[in-house]
Structures are given as structure tokens and as C-alpha cells.
Amino acid sequence: MAPVPPGIRFLTNFNREQWYKAFTFILTFLLYTSFHLSRKPISIVKSELHKNCSSELQTTGRGRLLQTEMDCGWKPFDKSNYKQLLGALDYSFLCAYAVGMYLSGIIGERLPIRLYLTFGMVTSGLFTCLFGLGHIFNIHSLGFYIFTQVANGLVQTTGWPSVVTCIGNWFGKGKRGLIMGVWNSHTSVGNILGSLIAGCWVSSNWGLSFIIPGVIITVMGLVCFFFLIERESMLRSTDTHRGDGFCFQSKNWTGLNGHKDTHLQFKKGKGQMYDTELLLPRDGVCVDGAGVCVPMQQLVVVKSETEPSPISFFGALHIPGVVEFSLCLLFAKLVSYTFLFWLPLYITKAAHLDAKRAGDLSTLFDVGGIIGGILAGVISDRLAKRASTCAVMLLLAAPTLYGFSMISELGLGPTVAMLLVCGGLVNGPYALITTAVSADLGTHKSLKGNARALSTVTAIIDGTGSVGAALGPLLAGLLSAHGWEHVFYMLMTADFFALLLLLRLVMKEMKTRQSRPGTTVE
Image 1 (tube, rainbow, N blue to C red):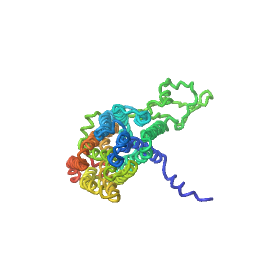
Image 2: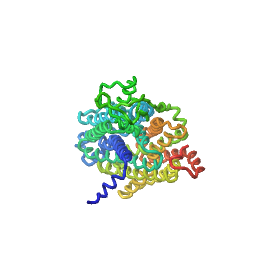
Image 3: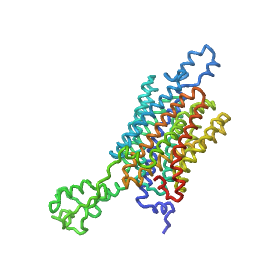
Image 4: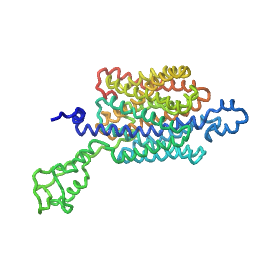
């Protein structure tokens, strides 16, 4: 007999639970990748909404002046205040996202994650496409673009609390930093794919730079509806519904010994979601030759304890470490999102590249972010010190940002190297706080096993971070008018404040030298 291929032997080593975990890991990864993929086009299209035509005006002469002004951008972003208007687009999206995030976690804990996430993804796809249709239908109203950004920001808040809750339900605290560090690379992967997709049409038809990502996130929303499994207990419930040895084939059976409600409860799958089981004997008899197997004794239904109620907003704030990490993320996300929305335009101005090449080059920052996020997770697992890991990376990030501002004008080679380093040091703490730290705090020992707090805690931390994400691009738009060096001073100051907010937790971790991974936040 021929030996079993090694690939098949490898696959058979995993049980069904491990396969479902892998499936959920990959699916949630792809779902949130599509979220970031749909956010990225605005940063790529900025340089097309306002083109740098000053050099063109000098070379073409006065005879081409009127025509060149018409070619210099898309109204109303073709005026001298274009940086403020582009900053307003970022600010409107991120402000709506920050406000909506605080509500999203609370709502998400009270609705099925699968349906809530599907709704958010489909509507986000529609609003992303709507922005791109502004180019196709020649819309030049600032209010139209502000509206689509606000609406999109609100519906995109459904994503993060939902996927973090889902992945937290499936994976325990063991090696959580590594698992979520790898998983959180969806942020950078989405940014990279969004840049590449938007760059394909940015110079020819920038409307498609929004429409294609909008279609992608809509399709992924439908995939979420059909395939997302929110928690492992749902699979056990499915097994219980299949009968496990009991086969109810007759639609007319009304129960035995007067227990009709019990049968209907089992038949319709009600009350079986939380480890509820029917204690039935394995021996039964067939009644009336109808092929219906029924027990000969009374049915007993054993129900588990009532489901824990969702935690309140202020209750989540009292979990130790939530306030410190939330405020730290405010400044860390300010830096990260400033790069997300303004890096391509900065490269265009500093390195004198066109929109497509600048967009492609900016993806190196996200490549560095993938490496930084994984390293932060591995190191924090190894040392069992989440806050200390973030603090060291923040400490190194500030001088690196200053170096990038100096080196980026010296040529392509140094710029590539500094983009990778900056991406790792800036996105490392951001990734660790929004994933492993949020999951640790959402399952904190003070909650006494109430896992329903995870969505609210995640929303509070990311919502506070989103305030910084809104402020960063806005301040960048205002400060860049006086020189890009002021933007980098602002980013270094934000890193310093993020580090300062973690000092208490770092000192606490230093006193606890021997801690298990996942128990660092107490």
C-alpha cells in the first residue's frame, strides 16, 4: 500500500476545534483587512485632488495659465487652502469614528456579532463607493464629500470591537501577544492593498480608487454573513441540535408525559446556546412504528446559570489599566494615523515623486508595521510585560521620527530604510494595545469570568485612540502649511506623552518580575 502523503498526514494532525480556530483567524483577518483597504484611498488620491502645478506654470508661460489652473486639481480642493480642506476630510471621518466607537462596543455586546458586522461592512462599502461616484458624476460640493466621510466613519466603528471580541472568544491568554501580533498585521496588509489598488487608477480615474475597495468590503460583508462563527460554544450547540443519538423524525409528536414544551425547546434549538443539555437515557423504544425514538422516563432539562449581563461604560473604566492604555493609545494612534493619511503627500513633496510612486513607496511603512506588531507581541509574551514593551518602542520611536524627517530628503535608499524602521516602532505599540492588551483587559480577573465586557473595553480603548487619530491628520494639515518639520515635532511630542502615560504601569511591571503571560495587566 502506498504511503500517505506527508501533507495529508500533517493535515490530519489537527482536530476539528483547531480547524475552526484557524478558519476564524483567517476570516476575521480578511474581514478587517477590507476595512483598512477601504480607508486608504483618500491618502493616495489627495495628491490628485490638488496637483502641484507651480513648476508647470513656470515652464508653460502665461499662454497656458488658464488651462493649467483648471488642470491643477479637483474643485474645491484646487485652491491655496487645499491642505485645510483635505485635513477636514480626514477630521470628519475620524471624528465620526471616535464618537461612534464609544457606542459601537456597547451596541455590539447586545446584538449578534455576525449580523452587526455584516451591516457595518455593507453600508461602509456603499459610502466608500459614493465618494468615488463624486468623480464620475462631476460633483464639486465639499459638503457631499464631508457627508460621505462622516457616514463612513460611523458605520466603520462596527468592525474593530466585533472582530476583537470574536478572536478573543476563540483564543485564550496563552501566547496571546504572538497570535494577535500576527493577526493584527491585517491593518498593514489592508493599507498596502488599499494603496496598490487605489494607485492603479489614481492618475486616470480616481473615482475607481474608491469604488473598487467599496465593492471589496461589501463582498466581504456577505462572506461574514454566511461564514462567521462568533464563539466556540455555537459549534457545541450545533452538535446538540443534531441529536447525539436521538432522532426526532415525526412532525406530529407532541411529547411524552405531558412535556410538549421541553420537546419543542429541543426541536427548535431554544435554550441550547449556553451548555444546556437534555439528560435522556440512551435506551428508548419506537412508538407506533413511526420510527420515533422516545425515552421511557420523564425528561429533565438542566440549564446553566443565566448569561452574564453586559458591563456598563463606567464599569469598564474601573478595570485597572483601561484608562492608562486608552490615553496612551490616543497619542500612539495620533502618530500612526498621521502617517496613514499624510505620508504619500509628504513623499510627493519631499521626494518629488508622482502620486502612484509615492503611494507605492508609502507601503513600506506598513511593511515595517507588520514586523513591529509581531515583534511587540512576541517580546511581551516572553517578558510578560505589555506596558514595558510599548514604552521601550515609544522611547525609540521619537528620535527615529526626527531622523526620518532629516534623511527623507537625501534620496530613495535612506528613505526606504527609515520607513521600515519608523513603521515598526510606531505601529508596534499601537498594534499591541489594540489587540493583546485590549483582550487582556476585557477578560480581567476583576470581571469574574464575564467575557461580555470584551467588546466594551475594546471600544473604549480604540475609541479614545480614535480621538488622537482625528487630531493627528487635522494638526498635520494645519502645521504643514508652515513647514513639514513642525509636523514631525508634533509627532515626537505625542510619542513623549504616550510614554509618560505608561510610566505607572511600567513601574508596576518592574516590581513583578515573575508573571505569567497574559497576566501582566492587573
